[in-house]
Image (cartoon, rainbow, N blue to C red; front, side, top):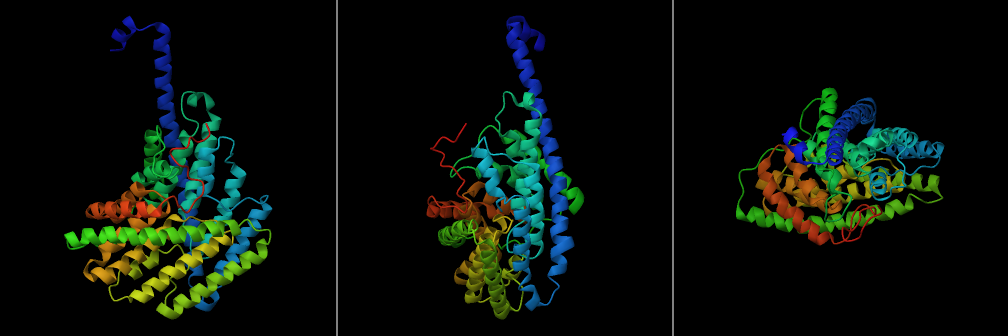
Length: 430
């Protein structure tokens, strides 16, 4: 085939195509390398946060445990100050770099934010591990692309940035497709970053494989299936999407205001107040449930919410307290992600709706709530639906999840938990 093509194609054009094909292979190879490095970094980060820190912190006396997150916020603030006053942003740093070619992703900032994230999350602040994981992958990808500029002569400057972000999300959630879709979907409101799908998929797959080599392949959530879908369940899914969209819009408003507080010149006082707010929310949660549901990423909340006997008002109270505590952690300069707090909020919103509509379909509504709340809060409906399918292993949740995610997206309007997303109708910087 090559011989026939060369008979009629000019030699110069043939050399150009051959060079482009070679560079494309090199781009995919570097995307795979980015994924492996990211997966290993995220695997180590996960072990430090969970096994070394949080699993021991959570064994403390509840009334001592209430104040540990505040101590963690103060520690994270000190680390960021020593590193030159860097911001606590992680996912926002990825979005900033995606849209601004002058924004650097440096190794020193990565090291400082990673240590601050271990301190923040290891002491039980109600944030997720996915933000630092995404940021680590994006930094690895951006630096590798700068290291090999000739390989990317004909490629977008953000190829490995996106690939690394995808690998970070894929690794921490053990969900390769979710990682790729989220990294492509989150930079824009209602659109996708184009021309980067193949490197993102390759990096997601290799990042996932490297991570599970360290931490195993168990699914992230254990949610049982439901007894089949009825038309009223689909109607309930649409209604839940509307409710979740409204709740996510309120939570997004709280988070955006909290980020503004995080830039305050009175950092020590603000961080102390944030820690006390988390302690107060924790104490109320313990009084209501007898369990430590307010601190930590919130995976235990999903198991707790699946019990049909939970009171509607208690579910609403825990949802409100979790939102307040997460916003306080953000205002206090905590280094962590908002993906999992949105997931937990969606699970609680779904449990509330199931208590009203049909307790027999509690697990179904929890999963639908996750899709709607997450999709609305981060404006990523495709990634949200992919996430619930991959992490629960229940494809039957896809259709009602789509209905809820679309309804939530419509209710969300232009709001989001991040101010760095770009309207697809506005051309970002080249």
